[in-house]
Length: 238
Image (cartoon, rainbow, N blue to C red):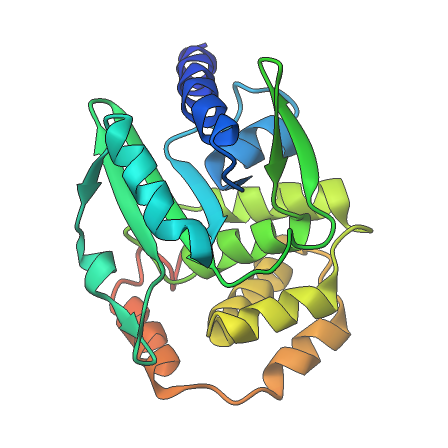
């Protein structure tokens, strides 16, 4: 009941946030906790909406930051903001206001990604990322970013995505996006864990394709760093 009531308050925040943004002509996609709670879990009270997560085209990123600031959201610099992966800063900013946490992420897109899904929030129609993008979002954070999850929540999230849209996962697109985001090793480790720990339906061809990709040195560093916290990731099913 508590999660359900908190989620209702989050939805009111999202509606108040998105309506003026859409009226201003910005392109946004919803992802993360909100999308999982509304589309992939059976009821809204099963998955908490802990953080709001928005994607926008890179060309709109600066204007979106201004829009959020004018709406009362304050930019919060964290250690993740300073994290450089392969010489390129992680393209996201975190914003906050009392009781609320929001991440704005951007990427170079000329158009809305394929298979994006409409999502209605209290009468407001928004666009959500496709299942492959959301699965990558969950896997790449759950397997390495212990400061984001730190629990087995990501396993449940990934399973719900796979069970809800196993026929709708664009696996070649998923691998392509992992390569573009330098998340090949993250995705490979996560899919391996999902298959071994919870018997998730991961195509062998996808595992084999990821295994043949070169791994960057900083990706290996991330994996080694993660292994220093076996209670968080390395032994989460022991």
